[in-house]
Length: 581
Image 1 (cartoon, rainbow, N blue to C red):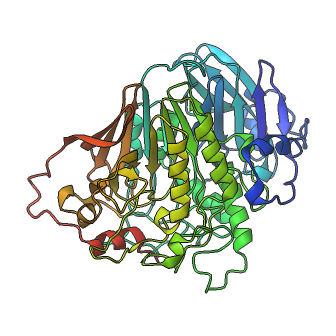
Image 2: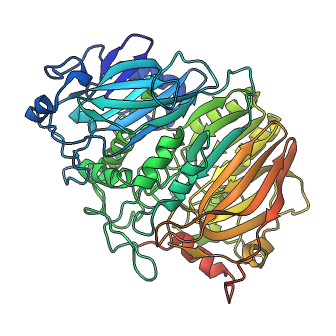
């Protein structure tokens, strides 16, 4: 895997061997760029083959070196845009589901031509270069394109001999001092391949957003017939439960080979962060889901998962993994309009208190416990104090607002969410209040349902002021179709008056961010257990400039064709969120 820094002249950089382990809790964004240099020799580490121009290769010469069919079976992607460029990505794989995780590729490097265009017809080349896909990094290609004008659309593709990739769309952010126009941003999470078709990704692609945030559970680790839904899964995972690098590479390839997911990646640049299933359900730092069940290879498993995640995502070189460590929290600025603070709430957290699930747990309020780790928490609060953005958007994984599921005096909350790390939540919320952040908005995934919430400094005082807003995206497919219901009847909303909306169907959230307001459409795909469903807006919430909290502006009535609208219970909600093998 090679990075090409696009400065007008192709520049080849090869990756060497991974460097030694660094201390996770002190590994800051600012320290990684310098550290990456040591892992990136200035010249290629292996002979890329006889042809210096990938486009000049013939099918016959490629076949003589083991490349016999189209290697662009996993599509293309772009990500992490700034005002002068973005990352473009692909990974070569002739046979995506090969058990060794190498996608049917021979164990040798291949040169890949990349081109960036100013027009959708791919006629006006504005940047071009050559990168090398090497077997050590799964034949993935990450190109950091820069020196482009700000606030523009671009298109890109890759080529190896006669084989040409699909075309993807990317954007540069507005100039740092400009607001630019309205930003169309979508966010998603939780795509269990076995539970449903990725129709939500297809409908999202058709929305033509400017930016997509994936907040975790991009893939799931289970072998087939392990995590099942009522009535049975509609598709099967290939291979065993993911534990090795080959396993994770194969699983990523199975997901990336899905045409609907490819369409969503090609439609817009993505900002990605992981949650738990990219490694192991409910893992925490160096602790697996069930520490009472010996898993002596967990750190090796984590290292393999991190490496495969990087290989398969449009991430910059600052996220190259180092053994069991990977820098994923980072900050992306969209001009003056928005700053995205992308968090990692898995790699640095203390283990869940009192075990997983919903508990009345004294450890949840222990001030020494953290879901982010001290370094990331300080990085985030420092970012609040330096921000001049209209909107400060925190992209992260698990539910931020308090959700008590007990109507009595006992507080029973999820140990895997911020409720299990109350002091962390309090310090960060107080941090944006003290910094006088203009418009703080938390974006969340994980819980397989749409939610909207006001955020408080004191959740035990329902009359106290709101200090922010939380928007939660349902799953792409996890849990199967789900069902519609009247959100006003949900018991969580009655117990927690700061919670304003609930819907248990699949889909995504599509937002329009302007200077005066941020509008969020909770988009719903009624069926994912059969392909081809349409999409509609179930509800719209607005966050107004300098008015903390959410305001509902639209609510679609429950479909009258549903004879008996199910009322969700506390037990139903907990089961749908937490039931795992």
